[in-house]
Length: 203
Image 1 (cartoon, rainbow, N blue to C red):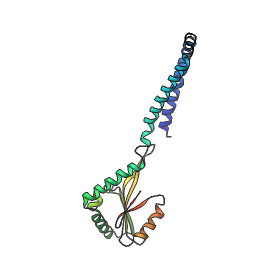
Image 2: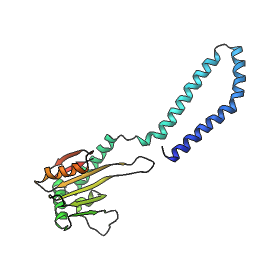
Image 3: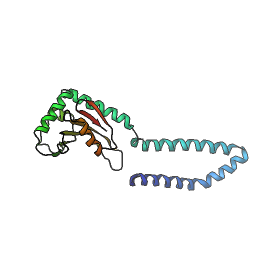
Image 4: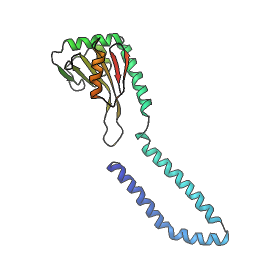
């Protein structure tokens, strides 16, 4: 719980205590009079009051914390995958993505480089990679096979729910096994699934 949520909780707790103390004297007096006139009425009032207070509190907590749990990760992942497929198809398909990535790797002389299109606006990416709206591109030749890790979705939000990470991993043809082993050592808690030849999704 962050500081804003804590202050909100303390505010509501203080308000409830204040209202309870303010109304307790009058409620006690009215309750005595009501019980004398209609035995059993107090129990019914307490039950109805408790039910409505519980309902209101549950509704408030649900509205306050729902954004932290919705949409569920599996639904968010499904929507991310759908968007990626649409963007790749709009740019020419998976084969074109692999081709453009190989060109980018061939023109890169460094064993490792990270490109952030969000900040490096003067760097021109190949069409398919640009169409994917890639957040970061990591080109590597350090572990033997040439690979490109395209970070498409994902960010961290302080005090709230961030966006789930989603990458595309493009591997030099014929070197998939070795490249995936290297990637698993880095993303041991991630799922790596093959989409097509030389292209894997990581989430």
